[in-house]
Image (cartoon, rainbow, N blue to C red):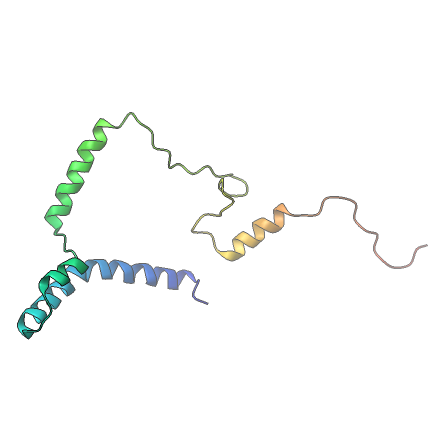
Length: 125
């Protein structure tokens, strides 16, 4: 039941929301721990989670883009070789977006019996 398109979309959006709110939650956790005067050291919290600012991410992305310009002549080997008729890749896997009904329909089309068909039962005149 949890394979519908709606539930997949909901899970995806919840994951994005978690990513977006993670720095805020960590800051709030650090504030609470600082005010609590407990035995918990901030070093332990720093080991568990790392906060990356947007500025640092942009700088890293810019550096990666600069590095990619130098390697533009090299072709990456991540292209998936997929059969256009059956939509299977080289490992026999269907695309992520395809649901079970579509997979079943394509598989049935591939595995049709080839040979003589039996005569229908009935009167033989």
